Image 1 (tube, rainbow, N blue to C red):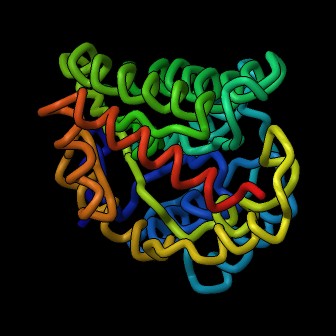
Image 2 (cartoon, rainbow, N blue to C red):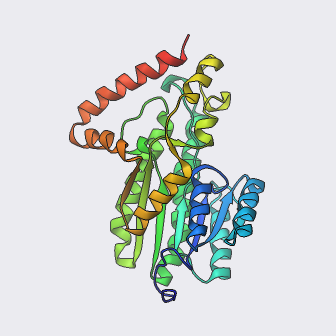
Image 3 (cartoon, rainbow, N blue to C red):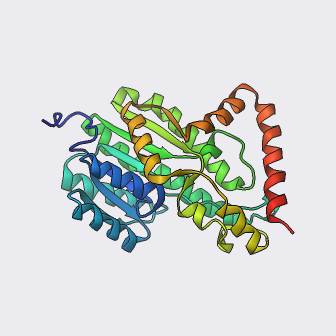
Amino acid sequence: MLETNNELRTYRGAVAIITGGASGIGRALGEELAARGCEVVLADLQYEMAEEVAGKICAQGGKASAYALDVTDADAVERMLEQTFERCQRLDYMFNNAGIAVNGKFEDFELADWRKTIEINLMGVVHGIRAAHQYMSKQGFGHIVNTASLAGIFPWPTTIAYTATKHAIVGISTALRAEFAGAGIRVSVMCPGTILTPMIENGASPERWVGTYPREKLDSFFQGANGMAADVFAKKALDRIAKNRSIIVLPGSYKALWWINRMSPAMAIGLSQQIYKAIFKRISD
């Protein structure tokens, strides 16, 4: 039997919205949630891709739909939440997952790069939290899950605008976990290390970089990346979300960097300096 209507469902019979649900981690979460009996809404600017994923989920017996969404549009996010709640009469999970990454040296970042990254990565999460909170606070339950990164718990160089937004996401998630607890709303934050997604596969694309670097070296750098498959990440992350973990770091080996930063920030900064030098040595002439 399903849990009663006024309790969070894990995950059978639940309803979940996933921004950035057309590919990568978002897609993997949607597919795994559906396999566990959850109805999923895959929200993405890449609507046709989201629709294709939703169609495959439905063909396999799951419940899924696609929604065209720009997370930088607060009104659009609120409309999506309103329509989903009216149709399903509940919202168990809000996965604020949409994001971008831009690589390069700080001095090559234009203000436009900063604004775009902040609008998508940070304000997109804020819009999702605000909209979800309206409904979760009324129903008395819900779980908000925000996607940050290893770059949110370690001073990762070379993606400085991304790193700034991911630190902010960890901060807002942990603070709201305390603030929302009395309303029955859980908040978790996922901090993935290297996950094999299109963000890695397309990492050598010129639009991903500020500054100019040899394309063949960028290709070699990203093709050599080792990481966790997105579907494996989704399974492990959802197991931890079900246990109401606050900060979820996967793969587990990346917890070492997290602990170094917590125990000795100076050591973490020193390690970050070495990472910075090593990356640009590999991709420069």
